[in-house]
Length: 278
Image 1 (tube, rainbow, N blue to C red):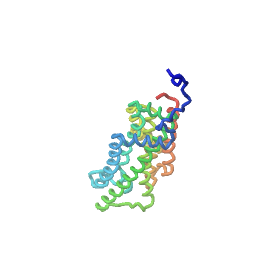
Image 2: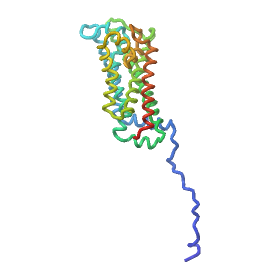
Image 3: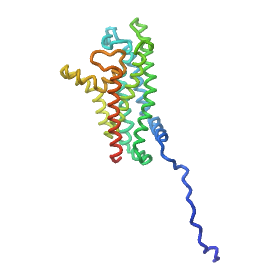
Image 4: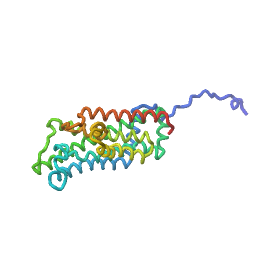
């Protein structure tokens, strides 16, 4: 055996840094959430259903209103409201999508891998909010414009009163429809994160947006007038109203009330995300 074999080996060797180890940054979290959103077939399907409801019911109401076989013009108030008549059902669909984006991860258990990759946790929630809001608003704005333009062409062919985007308050109402739909989805996203249970979150969102307004109308008129305008759905409808009627909130007031709901729900979701185990 040679002395070379017995010579101590140099152990002061720096281990190579893994090439795939990258610092977690918010843009990377957003990219991660974008990949998850577009890779799910349920996302494409639900967004397609939302657009179909918005445009389809807008065309349906434009074809039937005032014909004796559907609602009367007084049920909507103006031509813009007729063509945006599908917003209510579209809000239901996109709110469900918001729930699935958060509660769905808890249901499948993938939230553990997500939080392991992003230990700070809060960037995960804000990344979901940014991705969902951006995708939803762009798509809902295009759909609302399509519903408005197609619906107005149907009303014009029936020799009924029509509206143009250049008319006072009309373009703002179309943008308001996209804002309301995006907000409804974010409400679903926040509630899904709060409850972490898909069925329960969907039930709560549907109840808050669609059942409670009907129940409030059964209350005495003084109570209805005091509570009704401040419900999430009423505030959302005020955002996309061309003209303010009765005790309804102004578009700016409706936006402020709706924003308060979103801030409170998302703040609660953020607090619980930091405190609870996955």
